Amino acid sequence: MEKVALFFDIDGTLFDGKSKSILPSTIELLDELSKKDNYDIYISSGRSYKTLGIINNYTKYFKGYNLTNGQEIIISGNKYYGQAINEKTLVKILKLSEENNHSLGIITKDDIVMNFFTPESYQNFTSYIKQNVTNLDHKAFDTSIEVIQLWLFAKGEDLKIYQKAFPELEFLCWGKYGADVLPKGASKAQGISHIQKLMHYQKVNMYAFGDGDNDVSMFDVVGTSVAMGNASFLAKEKASIITDDITDDGLYKACKKLKLI
Image (cartoon, rainbow, N blue to C red; front, side, top):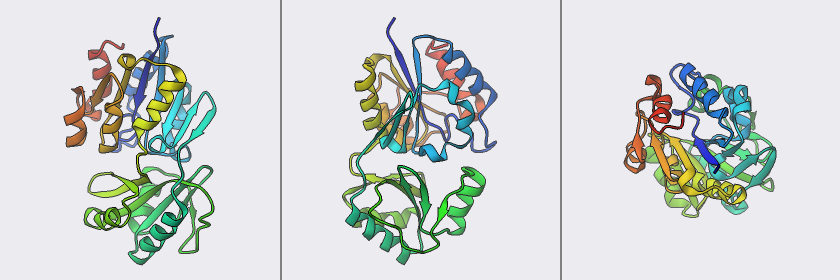
């Protein structure tokens, strides 16, 4: 029996931001999927391993993780990392963020560091992700440490300043506010392709579920892609099918429609 690989985004797909929970229908879904011997279930998220939060309560369901937008891959305990952000580029973007009072979340292989907090970035960690991080409070970051991703807390119009200044970086916007910042070419798709090569999945047996612009790349490398009803316009445009909102049990309904359960 051929293996089936299922890749699930976290925020807006597995995790409901309104109730700040994994919905009962989603837990039921993961339970049903995990009973299929030929199904391998993966997380595919912009979050890092250090910021999985509530997902840590459900690790028994997952074969592995495609995290930090493909920069941090974990399969059965084995870890693989993508390319680090160039040190000179890192120095420049830290300087620019300081000058413009924009928080940067600095994701290394071992830690999450904030250059400093603003009210917006502080709220993100205390009420949404609920993750303790190292706060440098404007002190210098040791740029010799490899950084695999940044979180830029800035409004849309300010993001354009960074996009223009750093063409060597990829900016995956969260919506109207903030972005994941990666080396050019890094993406969830790159991570999934790496997993596919390691695990020898056939594209036709690969499924991806998501709701954001950063999910679009992974939609291109799987056989079937599902956009949530609460997904971005671009995600809906690129997906094979569109399901209901997360709050209307859209994930469970999609898997039922696809006859995965």
